[in-house]
Length: 436
Image (cartoon, rainbow, N blue to C red; front, side):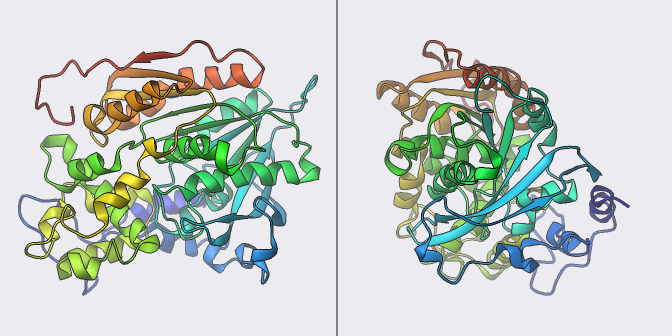
């Protein structure tokens, strides 16, 4: 049975009995799902070792001696799509980067090169940042590409079919903290690693970045940090969408109850809390802020991929699990940190194509996205922004990818990125409409 079928079978099986520490009951107006099976437990049952069990991912003893982007070790692996081997050359690089506090770390990237010849210039490279949005390293693309469960495979194949190489970094690191600026550092250092590996022949290649949602966050953070962190890396363009831009506004939206389908957004705050508590344990301190039930949910979400994390946290406002008198707004350091991590902190100096759905139930444009877009514009960013007139977060991932892949393909071939524009139309929805 393929890895994908094993995963599907396990996730559609009967729900496992909740652990003693996990809440057995929830308020009647909330999501009533008990503790769900974890994807990492399924991955550990497969013959391909997970990153936490694979010695290839281990830090070198002298990690501080490595330069940023320097390759620690390499290997060739088999890429699979839905568990079926895919006929491309995939080389994985373990490379040195740094975490949110500037400390040395290693993480991996997977470089996929199609068998289609490329002539006339160095083969261009699309750096594809998947929406990892997970808290376990088995959910990272360097592993899911091997198991055949890389969830955005269909999008990446378009660039491979054109002859481009595709770089897919584990830009959340092996400890999977996200929505932090080290995401951008890990993307940029993955491109340095691609250049440094002589066997790939991509040292003089043009690079473009693509990502949606969590992948859009990693992409735009890399573009924003390029000038100061990696001026040696040439980026010809970044296409992204669906990313939380103002994390303060996103936290305020996702913390409380939301009507209808917009209540799905509650999972983003739970998952964000679980991830940020790893890099900032004194600020996102579950013991100090949350009730025992809240702490159990955060602990449970500390070992999941995005699918079951979403099902665990949706329609379950974290606000209802704060200790009496405690809130995110009042918690020391939380809002200043979220402001520091918002996307207007570093503005890209290279061309950007940014899109966002007019009604995104997870990330409302009017409060979370458009104010940051307007700051980019006022700062003179080389920006092309469009509000996509479609509802729903995942639907906009597919709709926005079509022009994004065409634009990236063009700029990688040396064509102009086109003029700046800002089609930031206010949502033609009534004031107070859910997720406006």
